[in-house]
Length: 77
Image (cartoon, rainbow, N blue to C red; front, side, top):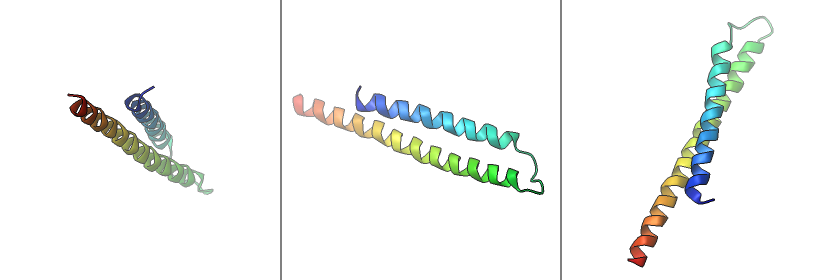
C-alpha cells in the first residue's frame, strides 16, 4: 500500500466519523434536567474537531506523497 492510498483511506475514515457526529447532533434534543444532551453535543463537537484534524492530516499526506512522486520522476528523467 502506498502513501496516497493510506492517506485516502484515512480521509474516508475521518469523513465517516464526521458524518456520524453530524447524525448525533441532528438527533439531539434540547437539554433536559440531567444535561445529558449537552454532554452528547459536546462529545459530538469534539468528535467533529478530531475528524476535521484527521482529514486535514491525511490530505497533507496525499499531497506530500504526490510531491515525492513528482520529485522522483524529475530525478529519473
